[in-house]
Amino acid sequence: MRSISIFGATGSIGESAYDLLIRSGGAEAWNVVALSGGRNISRLAEMARELRAEVAVTAYPELVDDLTDALAGSGIAAEAGADAIARAADRPADWTLSAIVGAAGLPPGLRVLERGGALALANKETLVTAGRLVMGVAARNGAQILPVDSEHSAIFQALGAENIDNVAEVTITASGGAFRDWPLDRLEAATVAQASTHPNWAMGQRITIDSASMFNKALELIETREFFGIEPEKIKVLVHPESIIHAMVTHRDGGSIAHLGAPDMRHAIGYALHWPDRADLPVARLDLAALGALTFRAPDETRWPALRLAREVMAAGGAAGAVLNGAKEQALDDFLAGRIRFTDMARAVEAALDDLTRQPGFTTSPEDLATVLDWDQRARQSAAGWTARHGGR
Ligand code: NDP
Ligand code: MG
Image (cartoon, rainbow, N blue to C red; front, side, top):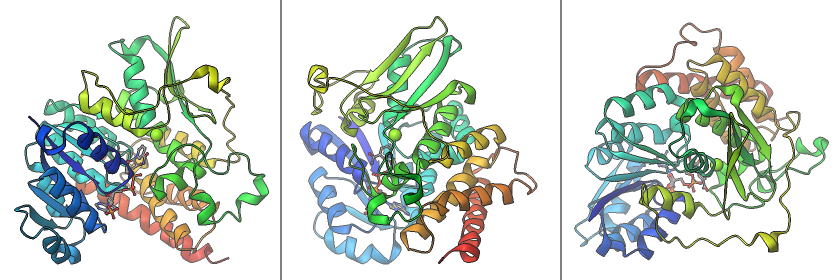
């Protein structure tokens, strides 16, 4: 039996992975080692019992008693805190899904790679904040990273065994999110509720808002660069409202291979779970005749300044990815709390990048986790400072 751990089990990606495990035999078919969650203790305990996990971990130390109570009599260990999550990642497992949201997903993912484990990576922040470090640790320990972000899974599949030098261009698509067709002058007043809806994908609230602001695609541009080692100029973004083509690889001979599928994350998760094999997955089959047409448009950088910021970050290198992500997470917290407006998020991130690019060491790629987390903290402080100066308007 293959052994499996899931970090971020109670989230949108975690639930989709859980669904695949249950459908394919649950605890009878999989040896589940560790499951982690955050505040949703009852769901974490329910999943751990159903899958007969060895250990369940909540990120929050103050919830350890609730988790212990919820697991009473099950024989499943209850643990809490970021350190406990990292220790759970040390437990041997053949396959680990990284599906925590935010930079908090980086430490456990790194621990998996340090022990040479296979890491299915939904947590894009891992590569955005620490791409060079993460890819180096994976290579040194013979660890396999399997992309789960739909665009990156699509590129991975479309690339196959092709020599990367034969790739002229990689295109990742974007639905355009909640505000794709809004008049620009209305964006300023967009509310949290309006930004939390997505035309095609059902996802966690944070990535849904990041889709509306295009910070999600900004992170994905950097993720593409770091994971595939492709030059930034070769990575394109294409707005594709139907979200059927997820990515396309164009070769130097002019031919392109696109990856198509229904917008259902169980495809990308299931692909990573069964890689290098394939299994039957419960995803809708495409009916292109019924769809009739697929449409495309160039992204508008006035509407979505996050795309320009991602280009600047890729050009700067070094700690810029950690700064963009840390500042974005803080700005998103501030938007969620009503302290800044929707369009202020990009302003706060740009200010953090401008502010921190002048700091010593900025252009050096962080070589250890502590340095990454230090830049992450500085970026959060910078963005919080922006909010203190400009928020509440
Ligand atoms: P959700 O917000 O739905 O879930 C996040 C998970 O992380 C939950 O299990 C949550 O626990 C847990 N969590 C939250 N904060 C912390 C923390 N500080 N430390 C440890 N665990 C924490 O997110 P998604 O599933 O949408 O996204 C997960 C990751 O996958 C993100 O990096 C996202 O960008 C990426 N991704 C998501 C896609 C999607 O379709 N949803 C598509 C592609 C990539 P709890 O809920 O119990 O509080
Ligand atoms: Mg994606």
